Length: 192
Image (cartoon, rainbow, N blue to C red; front, side, top):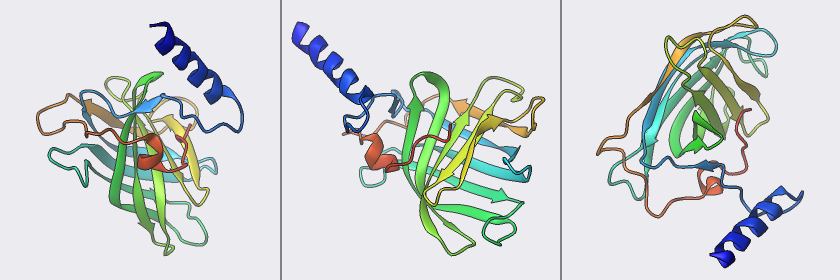
């Protein structure tokens, strides 16, 4: 018991030191694996409207592709001269729960954009009850594009829509062995 406890403490301390590579255990595949669906609109930092539709989870009998889902995101203000800037997933590589925020789910994968890019993405979807006013959505792309997770309703730059976490079922078991956060999302941090 003491050895396991001391190993855990050393790992936590190393993870807290700048420049160390010991992974923190804050983002893991949910056990049992549920799934999430959602759609709506938010406003970016520039004030432009952005719309999204996304879903994801684990996939039964998917050792080579243990996750499923999709992302369709449009920044109507545009990026790099492309108006709107369209991000469309073609592969889902991860589905995680943020353990300090148990109602948040991250979906990771690869997408293409109408700017000719093929890049890694990570989105945050958070279900905070009905009718969805307190739900949140955010997106980070490996090209540096970032819209931090923000409310789908509220008083500051309000949005609209709904995110729903669905209960696990036999078609959504967690993968074995469990992939690491790096394997699922590369170096992309959550869009917080």
